[in-house]
Image 1 (cartoon, rainbow, N blue to C red):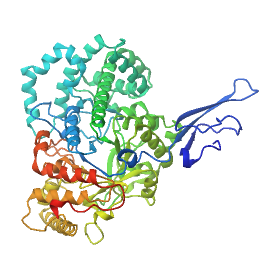
Image 2: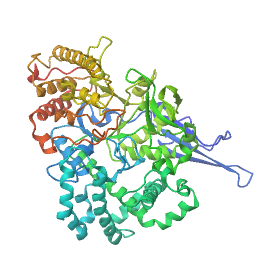
Image 3: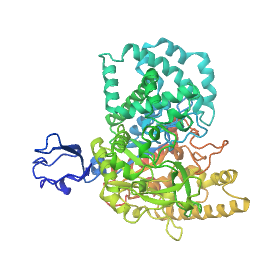
Length: 634
């Protein structure tokens, strides 16, 4: 490291590659800028002898809240995109058009960001379609495409006619009406239209000197081998199972096709060229649409915009594992150790990366994943951020009590994450719920990785809710999470009945015990609301008054950022997910929001919460002071 380069000024330097000899004049005279560098050394006088080493210069920290918000705090919303819908359009699932509408609503209400679930590529034909069980963490599920926004539609009469056809509209009507999302049928209908649009793109744009043709070429070149391998995986899945019933688990491929480096796979690269191009086109267009949403949000005055999400692991049979089998462990799954929530621990069924192999790969896989994760967002949630330091591995076939921790190169991983964060100007929020190693949160603060603080969990040893004045400043505070019941369900105990129906409680006696615990929690929350002067304490308070009062409490948090759930604005009662359960009657990650986006924009309860968040975002400086109670709630 040259003397001009100090960690205070330039951050940290990560040196990758083979051991190198000492030398005095190979490094540049001036400090290297942050980024990825390759040092090549030619050894003299031995002709032809050389060595290379990768150098990654990373900043001292990720993007900071001050860099995005200046001298104030911020507020926003969070939702799951698939659950959103407008009146009475769409295919029965939220898409980038719905995201654009929600961003516009949040912007008009003076908010700073909108959070969404991971948009990772998934198997839309699986029994349970989970956003946290990705085929790839670098590429996106094209089911989120807003078809009317695709430019080729204006030049493809057959696609436009299909979208308007009575046949398609009759098929879509029940998909729009039902409360659960039918991923497989929605994707079948969308794919028919997309195939026609891709044909038009090939004719008009592919390899042409047009703005769209050049943009596609640049995208494919930038994404490189990662996109090529992902698109080939999808194409092989369709070849094996059929367009409408693809096999997207490579363990079910014919034996020679399970190895991405096999001769048979190499032959399919040519044979399936048109299918590979189709899947590359889908990734190009979804990237364009998401980028457009983010640019529009920033142009409308939102300093953060889209708040994305990155899952902690990969589906074992997915595209990432197939393409880079050398990087992934065998015979183990990611999970969590036994704790107060589960005496058996948890097995998430996700395949972990092998830490030593990441370094030998020179972090190329991780670099691409992090870069794409922040590509079209102003803030990113890192699911289970503790996994950057250590991961709990569970032997396949055994329960989590047989698992063990495996340490990961935290400084190198967070350095690369900070580098991509700084380049994109995207904040990073680490989901630090669960068993957190000593010192991790302190290091997160130094790296400007914001904490996750959930009101439901912010209670002391006596069961009392903690004052918002005690929340960490360097955090994003929310009332709940996607694994917890919405506020309306929390108040009325609807989620407890659901837990009994799903078999997580053995009998009614257990249910009554849990109900008593919930009543105690509600009483403790009432006491905190009264003490903080955001609720008068009258017992006849309506459900809406409760929800508004709790958000008034959240708005007074010391946290630099707060976010309200769209489900809470809508008084939703059914949770998005009940961890560990995949019931046909209550499938996780498939519940549509009861209220349309139009309903949210005119609902008095939602408008009251918007006002609380807006006043916080506009009027609270980014210091340690606690805002006073809103005037209407004193």
